[in-house]
Image 1 (spheres, helix red, strand yellow):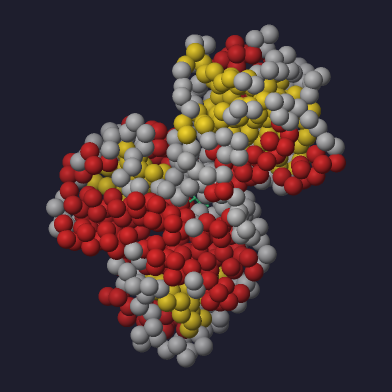
Image 2 (image 1 turned 135 degrees about the vertical axis):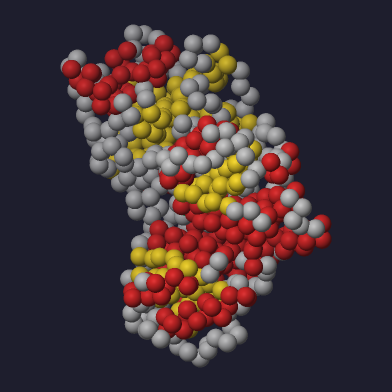
Length: 606
Ligand code: M6R
């Protein structure tokens, strides 16, 4: 939920840390801070609010150092304030710590330290790490860190510096992301790869409880018995440009526009599996009698779309569960169940917990993940990577689209194994998926039309999204996208459900977005459209079978026409129009689209 970064090397750490924090700000933006070692001790700057506040402070009162750590915060324990910002220091200012995660036993640890006379200066759980480290420190930082992590319960990615050992920067993780970057001018720690891409594409992915000791010219790894571990860095193929806005006003718009390429790349790389994993073709789908898809937020919505596709192609029942529910519901899964985990970050706490729960019950786990080397990618039995590249905007767009493509392809593979598809049918379906990038591109060409329509919706208090079957599944994503970035209340309903209660919310000029790509259900959804129009609603109809029969002269009805495709893959086209609609409504309201209030991209807490 928070972002951490650290640098030790031959260059001034301050601009490197600030620049890295910019790339991590999507992880939290309640406050930011940094500490550098500057000869005599730590220079610390912390500011509540966006990173800009920290930058301004540093511009006015410049500081310098060749080793430092920084943090961007999504508040959990304690309000956003300067005091609660990281880095936290020990009571004698000897130790500085940045932390991403939650220390579950912080109260007990804090009480004990306070009873010994140590004064805390913040309300955070994280400060206890700095205080405890300083309390234990007797001249050997490695020994101290081992002692500290043996006392911590919860999750953490930590950057630690000690004033008595200024030539070392220590990092360790448990259940939260941490990468170690290696460059010719220095070494880095970070929560995510884009923070270091400007300097290096050589990155280590430490496992839980492996300690990294970074020095100006080296990185060493140790286990908790202080024994050295050998690790080889991986080469990152993401380009530096992929984590830049490239002239667009927001990352979200850039990422929407990148989708044709992402669809194509994901289609082409669909056979690639996570490192050291068995290839996906070795997964014998015929041994399962149950398929569960579990995820959170948009990734869950991708699962709802996929349920429609798997059920239609494979003829099996598929359960889709919110990971936050699955983990606590005593799920009925066993060794005949395949559990598919969908996650852009691969670090979502609820999805990780759902995966571990499924594994503990003997289920096979297959993950669809975007971030290489992430916890879910590593721990699942099988992993396929979406080729979306780094996604920076908090609202997911291109990663969602890539998830859909991989899930379609998995459904086709499994249907082939189950002998539900002939080779011709398989070829035809794959050809339809292959054609999606060009069709998505055609929708992007309608950007002006969508922008124009969105500009009329800025004052809406509530917007409803309706659809039937797979159109309903993608309506869920359209609604989520709109509400998270525009702060307009919105709900998605199955068209047939309106009459069971929701229709009472329709008033004069309430906006209803109707999605229509299922030819066989066209009349049904159109009758829902007429029902809401006759009660005063205005309707935006999005789909590939919208025009016939629709009275376009009716001022209450507007149409965005989508290219034809197989009904099963139509969500990949609907979603592009829905994303653009949400984006432009929010843009017209002048909102901070890439960093919506209260949200963070990677939700590593419960
Ligand atoms: O990284 P994940 O895909 O596991 O994240 C899941 C959700 O937190 C994420 O999709 C969230 O709903 C997005 N903000 C939606 O745009």
